[in-house]
Length: 273
Ligand SMILES: [Zn+2]
Image 1 (tube, helix red, strand yellow):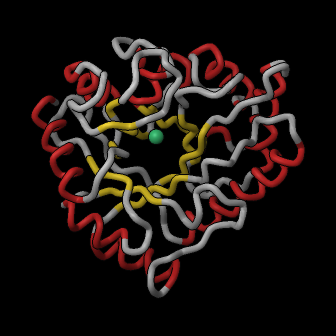
Image 2 (tube, protein in one colour):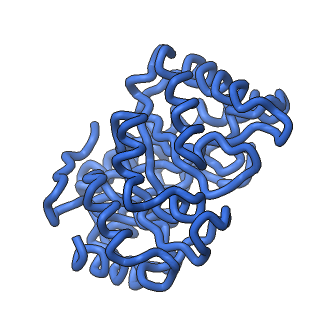
C-alpha cells in the first residue's frame, strides 16, 4: 500500500537506508516514518535473509505497530537485462525471492537497478529481457526500477534507455505494479539535467514512486556512483531540493553515516523544500 504523497507540501515522507538487523529501531533513532534496507547480502546470490529477531512475520507486525514503512533494495548484482544467461537466470530467481520476502515483511516496494547489456549488445535485447522479467515475476509489492549512474550499455542511465525499458514492459502482465525510483546522485552523475529530470522521467513512466535523495561526490555525467551527504557534494543544493519537491514521492536518503548524519540530512532537505 503506497504511503500518501503530498506534492508541494513540506510534509514529505523522509527516511534513510539503514542496517537490516532492526530497521524499526533505526527508524525510531531517526524519527523516520520510512526506511530502506537490504535482505541479506547485497552482493551475493545466496538469497534473501530476514535478520530481524523473530523473522519476517515479527518484522511485519513490529513495523505495522510502530507505523514504519519499509522499502527493500534488491541486491546490486541483480541484472535481469543482460544477454548472459548465467547472470540473467539467477538474477530473475533472486528478484522473485526478494519479491516474496519483501511481501512477507509487508514492504512498500522492492527497488531494483535497471541493469545493463554487454558492450557489443543491442540495447533492444535488454529492453526485451526486462519485458520477460516483468512477465516472469509474480509481483506482490510494487517493483520500482531505479536509474543508475553508469555502467556500460546501461538500461536506466539515460532517458532514451528508460524510454526503451518502459516501451518494452508496457505490454507485460503486471506492468501496472512496476514503478520508478529516481536517484538524484545517479541522475546527476549519469548526465541527466536535474532541472528537468522529474518532468522528463514522468513523461516516460507516468510516475515516480520513490526518490533516492543523495548528493554526489562526482561531477555531472561522470558516470561515478559515490553518494555524499547533502551540501557535501557537487549537486547544487537548490536543484537537489527542487527534484525532491517536484517528485512529490517518499524520500529515502542513501547518504553516508548513521542516525546523526541522516537526521542532519533530513533537516537540510526540509529547510529547502
Ligand atoms: Zn539509489
